Every structure is written in C-alpha cells, then in structure tokens.
Image 1 (cartoon, rainbow, N blue to C red):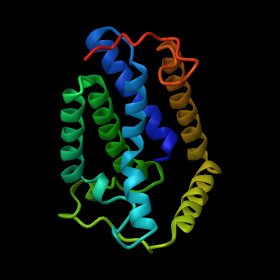
Image 2 (cartoon, helix red, strand yellow; image 1 turned 60 degrees about the horizontal axis):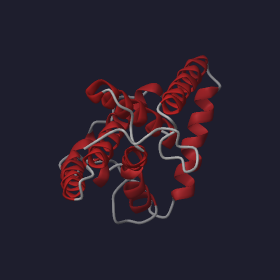
Image 3 (tube, rainbow, N blue to C red; image 1 turned 120 degrees about the horizontal axis):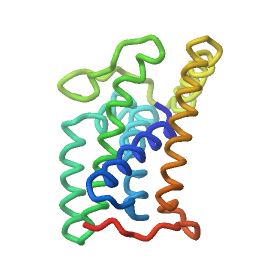
Length: 191
C-alpha cells in the first residue's frame, strides 16, 4: 500500500474507535502517534531491506507480528509510564492497521494475499536486491500506473479517492488534530 493509504486507514480506524469508545476526538499527540504507527513498518523495513542487505525484503522484520507485538507493548508501557496512554494506544492501532493493508493489497493488483511477512522469519518474506531503493519505488509506481489504466484501476482510483476523502473529512470533523496552528480540537481524549 502507499503511505497515504496506510495513513487514511489508520486515522479512520483510530478516530472511529475513540469516538465509539469514549465519545471524544483524538488529541493532537494521538493523531501524530497514529500517523507514526501507520508508517513505522515501512520506515524500518524499506531502507533496511531495499537499501541494504540487513533485511531480506521491504516487508520482513517490522511487518512481522513477532516484532510488531513486542514493539507495541513497549510503546504502550512507556506511554503509560509518562501518563500518555492515548498516545501509546494510537501508535499501536496505527501500526496494527498497517499490516493487514499490506497483506491484502496484492489482491487489488490481481495477486494473492501476502501473509508470509506476518510470521517472518518463520516464513520467508521474499527477497530484494540491496541498494535498489529507487528501482523498487519505480517498479511500484509503474505497476500502479499500469493498474490505473485498466477498468479495474478506475474502480481502484474511485475507492482510493473515497478513502482519502473520508479520512480528510473525519480529521477536519475532529478539529484537525496534530496540525500546528490549525488544530481546532481540544485535547479532550484522556488516558
């Protein structure tokens, strides 16, 4: 998935859970934490898997539940220690929203779900040539533009615009939390 898709799904998920759970809106800190959580797996795996030979692929270590769950527990415990429970939960929800997106994204491109990264290193996670970050991004972009030039791509684009628009509207309704100077919401979300 593209970073903006991960962000939109993560924010929608978190905001709706906060609204349903406590009837409040996400705080600025929680909105930033959910954003960080949605991007964290790729910020770890892409550079280490595509740019070096440290990891076998761009979906391995940080995409594995064997790594993700301890990291989330650590963040939640640290957040609790500093009385920032909502920030810990937001990061965890953002992180966990990223993983199924990557599992099922290949289906949109006509492939099969990619479950193996969730259990790396128990299951292999494919391989990539180290030092080929630009090549990987170029290939992904080419595949994406090829998809957009098909009838299925039209539906995909409509779904993506709808997803992004829904996330944007909810973020605005929440008071644009996390945007300095424009954050209209009070940090009502508590612990």
